[in-house]
Structures are given as structure tokens and as C-alpha cells.
Length: 232
Image (cartoon, rainbow, N blue to C red; front, side, top):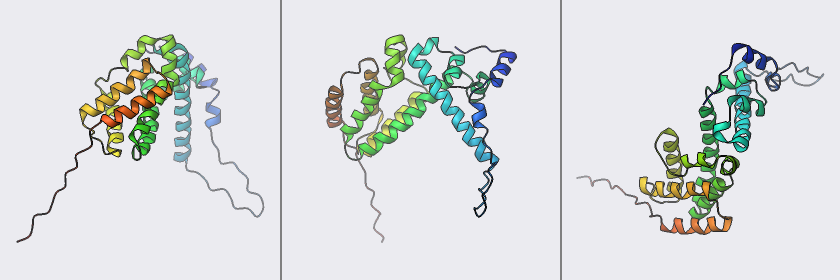
């Protein structure tokens, strides 16, 4: 579901944006006597920084709106307002609400996967506990459990598509870090366990105990070693 906007409303929003003026970074800095002149930043660098801040503001707005209103009732207009953006600016970065939600999930997943991959090198159970805690306490998922529990049905069962493919790749990387088998079966086993915490988060102690049992039951990776043929 996406918002329909008119050119006039988009123009009005663009004029009243509270964030865009802050993104206009300039290099009008006067050097004091005896000090070196500040290094000029390239227009491309300034534009990249501005785009990054705008994207972050959009995702922050989305997190707030989804937590409070759920997916179905959230609108691009709401996301823009809570992110401090003009609606036209938001549409310059994301064409639909689904794109905003997908970007939010991708960012959170990337950060979590990096943490878990590092932890898994020492103790897979600790990494799995970290992942389960993140799912159970995620602000958006926690909000949806209250305002729109039906929306969680799409995340409790691993499915198909680009989003789930990305999750599977990240999960396989975590298992690889701990020298566990990372084929389709163990990956989906871990994902089904993690996804269940979206609906039933349980307690931190219960998640840690389950993670320890799951880690102990996952098969060790089989590494093959190739030997060079003896020279005649």
C-alpha cells in the first residue's frame, strides 16, 4: 500500500522540510591567522553524506511508525513526518512503503549478522543467543505483537524471495564461522527457531538454554582436503 501525493503537496512538503536545511553542508569556514585553511570537501562527498543522513532519517521514521501503528496502517506520509523529512524527499529515496521496510530489515540484519559471526568463532551458543535476543526485543517486532500480530505471520516461517535469500546467506556465514554445516537444512532449522521468537519471545534464560541445545545438535562442517598428485 503506498500513498498517492499531488505535485502541490510534494512541493509544500519540500518547502517546509525540517531536515533538508541541515543537510546543506557548506565549506564557508574562515581560517584564523596562522592556521591552515580547511581542506575543501568534494561536492560528491557532501552529497553522499547528505544522502546517508536522509536515508537514516527515513529508516528511523519507519521504525517509529511501524512500532506504533503496524505495517498495514503505516503510510509514507507518517514515515516522512516521524523522520523529519519532506514527503517528496522520502520518495526520492524509496518509491514504496515496502521498500522502506525492506531497507530497515536489511540494515538491522547486516548489523546483527556481523555481531553473530564474530561471536560464533568462539561460541555458537552465544551467537545464537544474541540473535534470538535481537529478534525477541526488536522494537518493531515487539510493537507488531501488540498492534498488528497478523503481520508477524510473514516472518515466523522462512519463505522464498530475495529477502529470505539474504537472511539465509547471513545465517550460513554465522554457521561457517563456528565450523558447523551450513547447508539448507541446518540454516532453515536455525531460522525457524529464531523466527519463532517474533511471536513468542520467552525469557532471556530460556533463549540461552535453547541456543545451547541447538548449537550442540548442529552437525560439524565436513572439510575436504585435496592432495597434489605425486610427480612422476
